[in-house]
Image 1 (cartoon, rainbow, N blue to C red):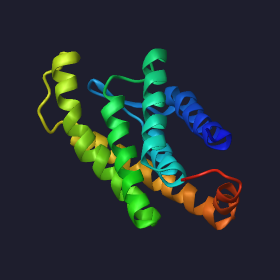
Image 2 (spheres, rainbow, N blue to C red):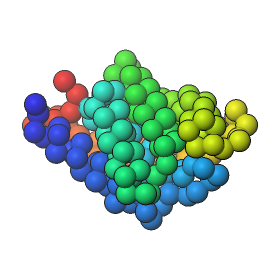
Image 3 (cartoon, rainbow, N blue to C red):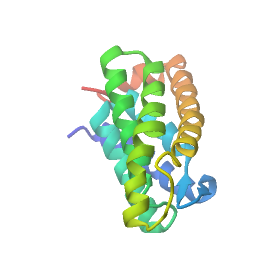
Image 4 (cartoon, rainbow, N blue to C red):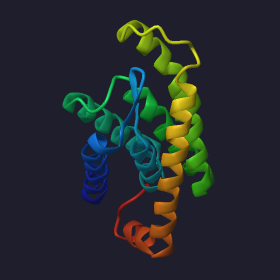
Length: 169
C-alpha cells in the first residue's frame, strides 16, 4: 500500500467530514454538500476512480454515522467520483473530471437516489426531484475542486506529489 496515497485520501475524507456540519444544505430528505463534489474531483485526478469512490464512500459513511449526512450521500457522491476518475484517467485532462462529477452525481446519482428516498426513507418524491439539487451542488463543488486542482498544479504541488510516489498508479 502507498502510505502517501492513504494519508492524502484520509485528509480528503477528514475535510469532507469536518466541513459537513457547516456547509450542507437540507433539501427535502437530502442534504446537498458541494464540498463533497470538490473532494471527488480532487480524488479523481489524484488517485483515479477506485480510490475516489473509496474516499466518497467513507466520507458519506462517516457523515451518516455523525448525523450530518443522509443515505442519499452515497449515490450523491460515489457515482460522480467514479465517473470523474474514469474520464480523467481516459483523457488525462482535468476538465473531464469536472464533467464526470457533474453528470455522475447530477444525473446518475440523482436517479439512483429516488428508490432510496422512496423505499428506504419513505419519501414520496417524484423520480426527477433530485436532479436539480444534486446537479446544482455538483456543479458548484466540481468547479471549486477544479480550481483547487489547477492552483495546486500551477504551483507544482501535483507534480511534486506524483514524483514522490503519490497519485495514480
